Image 1 (cartoon, rainbow, N blue to C red):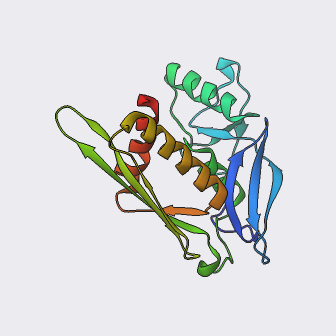
Image 2 (cartoon, rainbow, N blue to C red):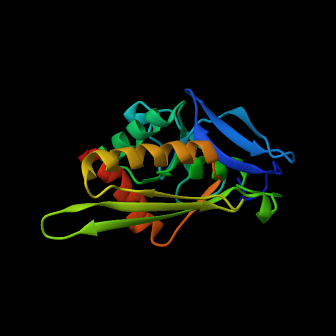
Length: 202
């Protein structure tokens, strides 16, 4: 395992697939996107053998702290394994994100050999209204690096229904434009958490 060691170019996204697989999406030079199903067997590193827990482990070469590897067939099994080791008081290391796990295990990287100008980049800005008695979306502005722009506005005369419509339209536009990267100011601390929360409130 070595970051960037795998030569596979132009990977733009990775998703969990059926048990034991992931879907790897690559952008072709003609702009089309292809999906390839690849094997994926997640694992944890433990600091000792876990045979006493009824779990098979592989002893790794070397004398580093986490010298045992336990491999499973699915991400669901990995979560159960992590919980089991934690409850048993065992010391271990495991990834919490399947994409990071897959990239680390394979040595692949996102966007390798993909020129920056070929990335599909979308920008999102969420504006909201909030006071002691109310909290709702006002508008969502979207743009991408093709020059496309749109603004979704909530009708203040019918906030609940209009807000629901705006969120559905936002979802539809993201699927339609299919960006590789979503950008925005304070995106992870406000915009992305806030919009789904408003959908749940509806």
